[in-house]
Length: 359
Image (cartoon, rainbow, N blue to C red; front, side):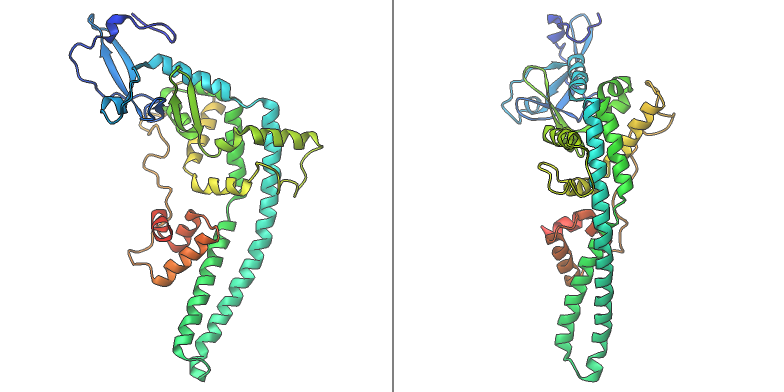
C-alpha cells in the first residue's frame, strides 16, 4: 500500500520484524535535525508484518542513547512535505526582491568605490615601506645603525608590509562576481518553492545545503530553519523593511547605505569570501532552473555535488615552518579585521593554519 504525505501509517508498520536499523541515502540526510534534542536525524526502514517497508527519520541521539530524547520516528514523506511547505513560506515577494536588489547593488557600488581609493593609498604606503627597507640595508655599512636596531626596524617594516599586502589582497575581491552571486541567490529566494519542487533528489540536496545551515523538525512537524550565508541576510525582515523604506523614499543613491540600521554589507562581503563554497551550488541550481530541467539535470557519470573533488582552499606553500615574524604579521592583520581566507592566500597556508596561529 502506498502512503502519501499527511496520511497515517498503519499500526503494523511500527512492528519491525527483528531487523536492525540500517542507513539509507536520502536527499534530506545531513540537513535535518531533531527539534527535541538537536541531534541529526538518520534514515531507517521499518518493515511491517506483511513485508511492506516504510521509511522513517529517527533521532540519532535517541537511537545511539547519547541523549534522553523521546522523539518518535517521523515518516519520511511527511518530512519531505514539510520542507517543501517551508520553501513556499520563505519565498521573498517580488516587490521585496526588487528593493533588495536595488539596495545591494547600491551598497556594492559604494564599497567598490571605497576599496579603489583605499587600495591606491595602500599601494603608495607599501612602496614607501619598500624604499625605507632598502635604505635601512645600507645603514650598517655607513655605520649609522647597530645591527640589533636594524633587525628591530626590519621586523617592524615586515609586519607593516604584510598587513598592507593582506589589505590589498582583501580589497581585490571581485565585487561584480559577488554581486552576481547575490542576484542568483535573490532569484532562488524569490521563486524558491517552484524551483525546489522542480528539482530531482540530487539537486534538492544541493538546494538544502546551499540555503540552510540546518533544518530542524519541530515537535509539531514543522520546520525551524537556520539559513546559511548569504540567505540569512536576504531573509532578514529588518533588511526587507530597510530596502522598502529607502526605495519608497525615492531610491537609493551612492553613499546613502553606509549607516543603515541592520545593513552591514561589509560583513556580507566577508561572508562571500568565507563561504565561497556556496557559489557552485547556487550557480548549478540557477542553471538547472534556467534550462527547465526536471529530474534529469545530471549528465551521466558526473558527481551530484559540484564540490565533490573540488578544493576551495588557497594554493599551498612548500612545507616550511612559518617564521616568528610571519606569525606576528598574521596576528596583526587578523586583529585589524582582515579575513581568514585573505590572510591564508597572502601567506600561502591553509586557512586552518591561520585560525590555529591567530586564535
